[in-house]
Image 1 (cartoon, helix red, strand yellow):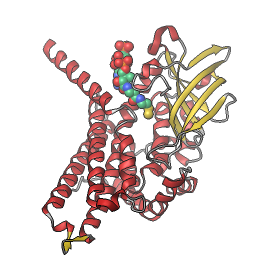
Image 2 (image 1 turned 90 degrees about the vertical axis):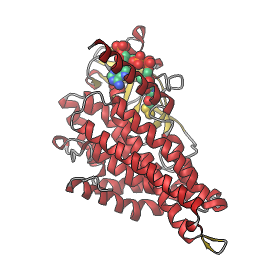
Image 3 (image 1 turned 45 degrees about the vertical axis):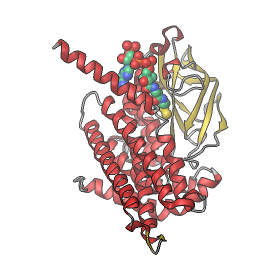
Image 4 (image 1 turned 135 degrees about the horizontal axis):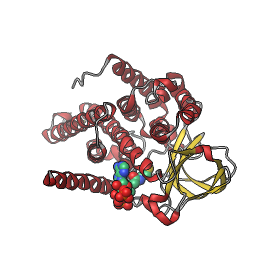
Length: 387
Ligand code: COS
């Protein structure tokens, strides 16, 4: 379907598609097996300017907003969702700076992120604070002109490869999540220690690691916004980043459908191509319909956010919830269409199913997305009741 993208958006989409096909797809299986971080792909994305997409023009970016990010993430994820995360995870890590950074802080970090000189990572999740993100324990104690951070963040995308980390930590533990603050921490700060690298089911080309803060001293100038705003900055970040996860899921689903269609046309059983069987056709039709519905929702939400739409937390959660469930169903059916071959590592399709699973889990499980949506619905209904 034609979404009437602007010429600039179409160009970006074509560029990302070309890179995905020519550069990413040929190495996807290699990095999936090794679990190594694809630095050679980072270089490709750098040269193509893909890290600049969502950074405003005044800070050296392309200023193409969430929509630009969604288009790039979808196209790259069609070839490899793990490799795509070098870009998407960096965009996530940069968001707290975009949302709450001072002009000086933005000037210090955003141009380097846009250039791809440094990758970024967002540190919210802790071993005891996953869905219950407000239960974080990492502390940041003011000491003279600095804050001293202590604690452990885990499951950090781009952990160990990022040059800058945006970190949520408690400046006033007595206030719980209302006592949280956001910081920007350079990777080479003494006391920032990269811990265990995770061995994952899918998105294996993405670096996921623990980040420890052991008396990590950061200058007070690295506080984003004001003390006490950290949790709100984190939640606003997630409201803006969830369409990106949705786009990743969309790309995975589309990539799986592309492969399943091709296979179904070529595979012969009972003397004919299996694409001629109604059972297979119905699966393909359902897959394509769900994918198009996900795409329409994601693009609409991205545009809504970029054009200054209000209270987008609900629709952002809807896009992530819907697209990731679609990705799981579509990739499972794609494996089914491949039959026994689909189960074998020798074929590319099982990777899509493994990669899809994380999109139902990270940046808020789909159960949490339903909570977020329902809370908004109830609040809106109550407000209408009062009016
Ligand atoms: N934007 C701004 N503020 C928000 C907000 C949003 N989207 N959502 C909630 N808040 C505010 C609330 O208004 C509330 O403020 P007050 O304390 O002043 O009343 C505060 O934040 C706490 O909100 P709430 O009571 O809803 O928080 P819970 O403790 O129930 O936690 C969260 C709910 C938001 C943490 C949960 O729904 C969630 O999203 N968990 C998943 C976290 C996640 O995505 N982790 C992935 C990490 S990055 S890969």
